[in-house]
Amino acid sequence: MPNRKRNTAKPATTGNATEPVQFLQTSRIGQIGTSAGAQHAEASAMGSIRGRVCVERAGFSLDADLNVRSGERTAIIGSNGTGKSTLIGAIAGTVECTDQTTLTLGGEAMPEPEHRGIGYLSQDPLLFPHLNVLDNVAFGPRRRGKSKASAHLLAREALDRVGLAHLEKRHSRELSGGERQRVAFARVLASEPRILLLDEPFAGLDVNAAANLRELIRSVAEANRLTLLLISHDLVDVVSLCDNVMEIDRGRVVQTTSVHALRSRPATEFAASFAGVVRIPGVYRDRAFHADCGLVLRSSQFEVCTEPLRPAYLCCGPHEVDANPAVDVNDPGCEDRAISMVGSGTSLVTKLASGLMTAEAVPPGTTVQVHVRSARILPQD
Ligand SMILES: Nc1ncnc2c1ncn2[C@@H]1O[C@H](COP(=O)(O)OP(=O)(O)OP(=O)(O)O)[C@@H](O)[C@H]1O
Image (cartoon, rainbow, N blue to C red; front, top):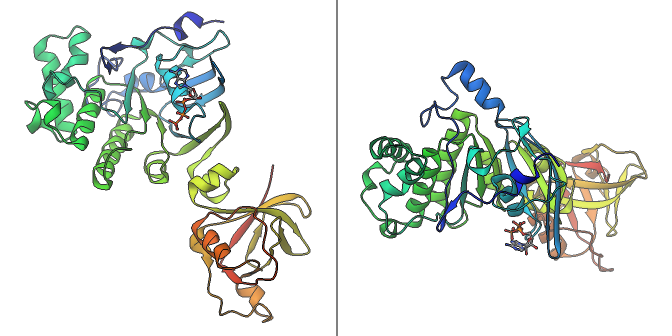
């Protein structure tokens, strides 16, 4: 239990607000890692997060192995209550870990929370209502011992970066939700983090505000090669910000994959739903896919990535489904043009097209022709 004490340390919070802490003392906002040469290389390598994270609570246990490289941008996905926030809370030091935890940061035992270089942003900006915008952002640097002047300088740089320099005198209660969230991100920037932990930061924002903040976070993370862990239930966030995806189910990591693979070869039912991909279980035999739900699908457009007779999935995007019933499945050319599915009625078509199709029983006596332009057949392992 090399770092038990450190992993059980209390969070770096003040009052109502979680205060991210400074680690890269030498860099300036927007320039972390882009111009600091060897210093950056050293700092960059320090953003890796590896090891086992164990948390025990009444009725819930988290036991996750992490292998996050420095500068990697990883989405954490999973159903409600599977332990995503608990996991990043453990990394931030706001959640107590058990003795089995072996988490390391940059290859070293996990330091105290205030020395982890973590910037944390959640759905709730948690601004101090009695402070103006500038003092909210300067709060962290002040607490770390900066003079008022240098804390304000750092805060102004951060506010400039998020495009809110003109609002520095406003109180947080006088801001819109989107502005509050940008101020919260400026506060993160003022702490000059090397790791960003984002817990559904776009959940309360309208589409434009969310897109703006996503772009801002993406450019800062890229420019500074920050390690980023993002919890989100939205594929747009994941595709915009991340390269990799970690899926958590009931406190366990069930897969770590690329964003591309999540969409092209979803390994779980949840991943398929998240990516909006049609995923139908069955087996491939005699040049046809025999779905568990009773559909038989034939096509020369199948990309078969499995052995015949093995449990498999047929995967395709909803945009590849064409519910045009005009094609005759008895036409000998049909197999060459598209997959022909013979199964239940219009609800099946709707479910296929919306990506909601699962292994449901097909009511007997109804026939519908559905065309899928291309599909992959993947092993069920
Ligand atoms: N402070 C707490 N004390 C005790 N149990 C908690 C606490 N916070 C969360 N839990 C429990 O821990 C489990 C994991 O919760 P967590 O918030 O990590 O899930 P999540 O995957 O982030 O969920 P969501 O997607 O709904 O935000 C749940 O069973 C939850 O009830």
